[in-house]
Picture 1 (cartoon, one colour):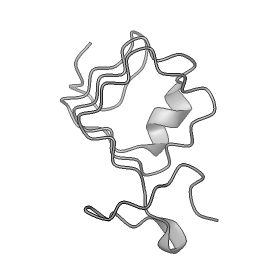
Picture 2 (tube, rainbow, N blue to C red):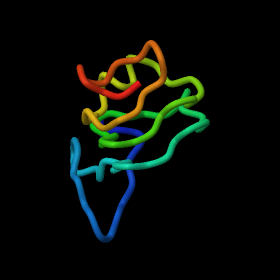
Picture 3 (cartoon, rainbow, N blue to C red):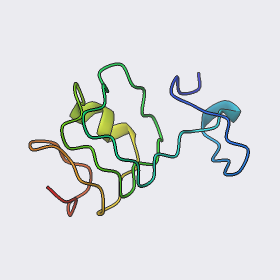
Length: 84
């Protein structure tokens, strides 16, 4: 089964499992976003700002791709050098 959180982007296509297009949230400002039900499997969160994202869990971040430039809420880890 492909990720539930997938988009079809006509300019940048990143394919996930079974041909789904995986979300690229690179550099997105997700401060205050409701993330409780988000399926982030293979989503690109590189350089995204997730401070204050409501309902975001470590399990979601573990399924996503996250660079050291991502800004994460206190208590959550994406990669060893993610900003706090």
